Image (cartoon, rainbow, N blue to C red; front, side, top):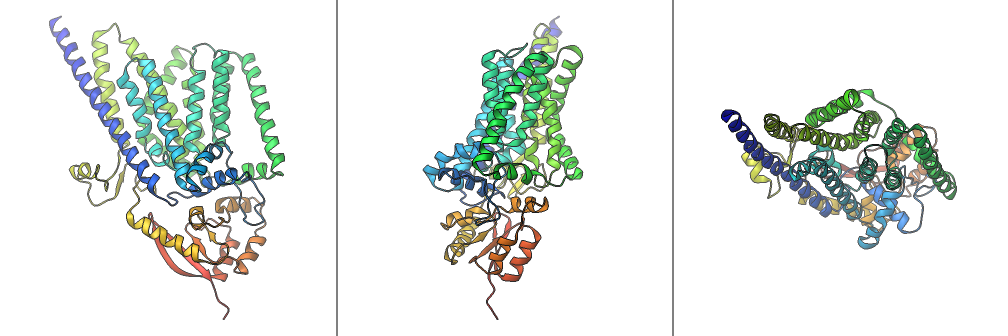
Length: 513
């Protein structure tokens, strides 16, 4: 008995030390996220393709205009996202002007709130603040959340609303109360009106409710669908049909199963410990209990990652699955805590094994900008000098910190755009916005609609052929090929300017010979 008691004591003390280390490591990831977010909040230009156009949607709403418009007339613009994120950004646009900091502040706040909500939920289930801190820290530690969280993009706001919906609906074990159902439905509706990908969580919630009480689930689903369809129809009527054209047709892209397979493999490699814990909860409930909303959401969200195979999609499509898995893992840890409560040896073993596993998970998601004053000493200690950014994802266009040279070169492009006569044609919106000019086109929407036979590019091509634009600024060249051909014939390059790891090609009209 003395030996057993000694082992239990040693195991408990070692476990406490390990949990303290877990908290420190994941808090460090939170600091790294804060460094990255602060850097992007100070960077005035597009960091990721599409940021400026999400801002432009908010700018249109701030002026009382719809962003869902005729893409075949000047300024040839349309948006393929629902309006809620951009409406929420309107007060920030009024405060800061048409600047990317508006969308980035909103997205960063949503990401931090998401981490806090997950941490509080897991902390409540386990009644241990260290485990709650791990869960919230794990949200910020995920490479995918780190990459996307501070960007002027709607995705993290959608995930926040999805998570709040699930947490509200999962409060009661049997079936949500009327209050929980109302709160969950409102949050779920907000998620869908932030980004269409939330349909996966809507289906997960319906499946959960149907498994509990089929008739009650249908009673909920019919008015929920009816309200959203009515709102959809009203917006379509108000925009002359352009809402449905762009929100549906512009999102129909080619599918590459190899891209989906690669991202699934990467997702599992980066989050293996959390995913295995979540899978253990699903299997346990499937065979020995009944499926909870967290288990069902984890499965649906994982399946929803298949949409990442679409052209233009990427790692962000797995963020909902990451958050769902973290919550499911937290619920499993809470169950283990209860199972081992009356078994001292089992509790000591769990106190050792769980934090060791979570420290291993921390290593899987390792990422670090190495050129910041706070992180440079860590990078030197780890022998990571010579690179601006290290990430277990491998090569990534996201995650590094913009440099002073990026800012200088960006202002150089802005000055060229400002000095150009007349309207300007910039593939990213922030160049035109900083120059005080109207952004023209949304390249990916033009391309998608053209491929789907829903766009006649001739009006835009005629303006290009007439050299109506004083300057053209290209980066990825995500335009229909006839548009690119017209640019090549009517404009000539004068400079290639590097900003943030990308080369921006500057073109001006060709003069008559």
